[in-house]
Length: 418
Ligand code: GLY
Image (cartoon, rainbow, N blue to C red; front, side, top):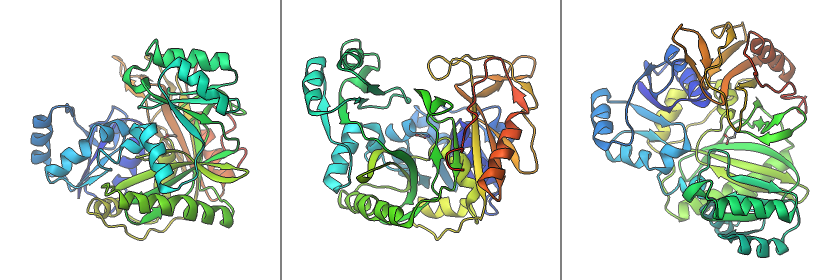
């Protein structure tokens, strides 16, 4: 089969690598891909905002299946556009993608589905935000409604901080239309699990659980990032798992079906495990990044077959390897606020160990053919092993093969899980 993966980061490199090792897959293409990804896929330049160009490209290549990586393509309706051309797609419809594209849509969906989630108020100005804050206890959580590339969530310890965040969104319009409305939410203490399911909108297949490390620095301090490292599979208590299934996954699927939303893809449920039980922090309508990097290699089977069937609305039984995976993210100086591009990577970015390798997330080659930083999260060092300890040791040994000026990397990925 001939596959196309849309996107260009570490998640997409992980999807491509998994497809490359799928017996049913003969060709893997990427749009736009990257220089790093071009080591494993045929990359194309294509303006996805031009329907005529997209149609001509799809006619030319006759893909058996297209997997959409990032949320913005889904929120823009690319999967609907491709389905209308008769192309099999893994990715939810544009309306269903609002589960990630609008935090307010997602909250209203959770309430209607009866899924546990933090109490909230919808706000759209500074005065209203401060008034609504009286119903909540600090820290205050203010979340911009629209997609904000990880920059739309403010955790405010005081009313003064909340006021400044609300002024940024509603008066200075720092996130544009994405911050025109927001959710003010009750803060929930607990720990987070990335609970990803493959779903055809009726039934679900849970993927191995993963645990991301969202803060920039060791000990879970510093600014929030897209994720600085992740391990899988995470083992949780059977009672908690069953509670997540019955209180969150099943009602979500029932409501998805009842709402008639077309969903053939991944639903990433950000679960917060609190003292009162699991609650939903957020929905994402795609694989997590870097969660995909550690989940994909765990399938004991053929991702090409799984995706192709899912694009036609079928969920197939899946088995998982008895293996542990770890991913350590190496980030650019200045990430997450202002990542510095063009910093030369020293060492061997092509290195592969017996149980470790790199996935490219934000790299490019400079005019001398040297790898350099070209994004916030630059490269993912991946390790595998028969235990989490082995996987982590392989990932960190891999990471040591390269460095650059100002490189940022956590040294405690997976430590809590150990
Ligand atoms: N790693 C978090 C996310 O993909 O949203």
